[in-house]
Every structure is written in structure tokens, then in C-alpha cells.
Length: 450
Image (tube, rainbow, N blue to C red; front, side, top):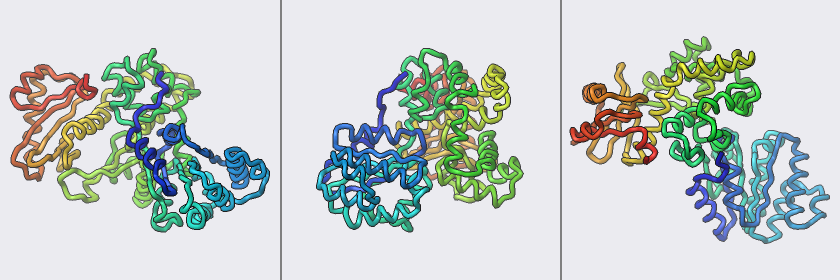
């Protein structure tokens, strides 16, 4: 099990440059829970003076007392620890020490929940004391909605931030650093259930098979990832039941607005409002077909996070089996349907691979009138069309797929002097021969540079 810090080179570089600047800084860092925000901050500033304060669900007064203690201990000032200094007075104290220091307030939303005026206090502290100091103030939060409101023009902090970082999950190719002995196929399977969330990936035991890990981590009442999705949504929404129903609908392939309404039985206004809320916190995103007009009738919804996608497709519907400790039955149900599920996961990974490989100017999935192409990309005057298959393809089947792709490509409204066609699969028979015919062929091993 790998425990070292993996990737985040660009974020570390940005924070290092921020530290070296000679001016005060106000940095906002946000992203979904478990994505590694705290690890990033602690790594970036491990060798510099830092006051790290982790807020929690206690009262405003208790969080304030803990903040006083952290400041007093850092500066060796017991008077501050025993004082009744307010938030504003503490920020003034830090600025008057005239020392270059990083001040991290982690899980800021907990403070705002108990003290809604806190953003206004931060604004006053910045305007009166911090902006002309040597302090680097870092505000970290997992509630994406609240953190983005702090960036909005109605926020007291609007226009004052000097940097913002949204920490996102790792890409699929980083998983081999967590599980180096796993095959490319199993790495993608892990990606399909845990996405690129470091905390989840660190819990996989490399000595166990993929399926042994799934049962251990997801399919037991005491499993660490069994109730995780419910916990995360309850952190964002007080009444998550309807959100669960909507996410289950999407996980089962009901991706249009009308399909979600029919599956859930909720009225259209309710579904629209809940989908907007899920989009705001990045659990769901709206997708339109590339190279087509963006209209509501051709819009689809997809779950952005593979952990949520897997949980709502397999764990949530099998909770009764798990609660009754029928773990083997739950696992068999998942295994029987997992290859079908992996088609969408593989497509997501392939899209990242293709963007990385070709650096398209524009690209994405295309669909119209019942026809679909997994990826269409444009680079210069050349259009690229790809189909993605989570399967082992015989040469004859690969040729059939390409011929169908060429026919569908005629329906894409795209101006190109050259068109190239490709296929990406777990394995393709006669790969070299197909490439001689001008077909672009990638196999799963190519995604990991094997």
C-alpha cells in the first residue's frame, strides 16, 4: 500500500512561488472531500513557518479558542493563549508580529456555519491588517458550493484573493504509483470504483486481488467506503434522499432530463433544482454533444466521480444484501454486471488519454438522432473519430467497428481537410496490419505507456 505523496507538481509549484513572493497573499483552496487538499498544503509548506488550524463542527467560540492556542504556541506567547482576543484581533496580532508566515485555516465552512459573519471579518482583517503584512493566508474548504460563494462578486472577499486552486482527483495514469504490480486492466477497474481519490486508493491492498479489495472496502457493513457516499452528501445536503434517487437514475443510464423525471417520479421543477445543486458541487455535470448546438433537448447528465458512479450503480441498490451480511451474493451481482459498467469508465480514461496524446483544440462525445461517436476531436484541419470498446476485438470486428464509424462520421457537422479514424480497446487482433491501413489503434497497455 503506497503512502507517499503522489503528483500535484503544478499545485506545489504555484504554492512555492506564492511563498517566495514579497507581498501578502490570500489563497483559496477547495475541492471535494478526500481529494488531498490538506496533504497538498502540508507538503507545500512542510519546511516553512506555518500556523495550521483545522476547524471542526464545534461552536464558533470553541474554534476561536483553538485558533488562539495555535497562534500563542507558534509565537511562544502564553498571554495570547489565555486571552479573549477576537478573530479580528488575532489577525491584527499576527500582522503586527511582522514575520513571514503561512496561516492555514482548513475546513473553513465549519466556521462559517457557526459564524455567518466570518467572511466579513476576514474582509476587515485583510483590508485593515493583513494586506500590508508578510502573512500568507490560506483558506481551505471541502464544501465546493460555499467556497465558490467566497469567490463570487457578492462575497465580502470578492477581489481580494491573490490565488485560487481547485484540487481535482488524480488522473487514471497515476494509479500505477499506488498499485505498481496491478495489470493495466485492474488499474482501470480500480479507477472505476475509486476514481483518483488518494485516500481511497491508499486503502487498496496490492497483495489482494481487485475483487478481494472491492469486497473488503465496499461490501461489508464496517467497510470504510460502504457508507462514504452517504456521509459526503449529508455534508452538503440536509435531506439527501431525493438526491440519492436522482443519482441512482443517472448511474443506471437515465441521463436525459426526461428519463430522470420518469425514473424518479419527481416533478420536473424538483428534478431541475436538484440537478443544479448536484452540478454546483461537481457531483454531476451537464454534457452536450460536441460540434452540435447546445440545446436542452440534447443535453445529458453524467456523474463526474467514479466513486459515486460505482456506489450508486452497485452498492446502494445492494444495501439490503450487505446489511444482511450476504456479502458473497452482493459481490456476485456486481461481477455479473461489471464489464458493462466498465465501458463508460474506459471511455472516460480514453478521452483523457487522447487529449494528452493529441492536444486537440476541441473535442468530446458526439450524438444526434440515435447515432453516437465516443470521441470526435479537431486539431488544425484534421478531424479525428474514435470508438472505444472495453473488450478484446477480433480483426474482423475491429474493421466492422471502423466501417460503422466512418458512416456515422458523415453526420458530424465539421469542416476538415482530412479525417482520421481510430479504435481503442483492451486488445485488438492484427493491430499492426490495421495501422498499415491508416487506422489509429490503441490498446489498454498504450494508456499506461507499457
